[in-house]
Amino acid sequence: MTKQEIIEKIKLAEEISENSKKFSELTYKIVLTSLLSGEIKDGKQKKTLFIKKNNSKKKSSKGLSQRINDLISEGFFNETKTSKEIIAKLKLIGYSMPVTSLPSYLIPKIRSQELVREEVKTKNGKIYGYIRKS
Image (cartoon, rainbow, N blue to C red):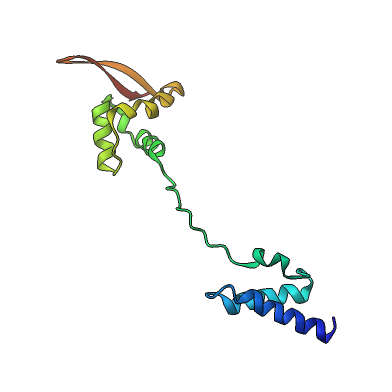
């Protein structure tokens, strides 16, 4: 590489790094290294050199479905629990949901035979209770 080519690459690196105010020195070094090594032949690939900021929110590693799995493994369902009891327990650990949404989480557990649904007699009639399959 000639001296003139190196000077041109330094100028190109300076031009590219000016676009990044926060990391201008770091960007300059990365761009210059890439230009001198031949990874970049002109400024057309400059967009790929900038560090991308991840603005997306990190999703919780444990959702409601996982919390229900935790309740099963902790023995919460060793005795029959009604929907209201399950909702109350979930509220205690920070999950709030309407009673009508609960079956969409429990039915897959019934189908996979982790839980069993039983009829429970109450003053007002029969309701379903959920218990861990033994």
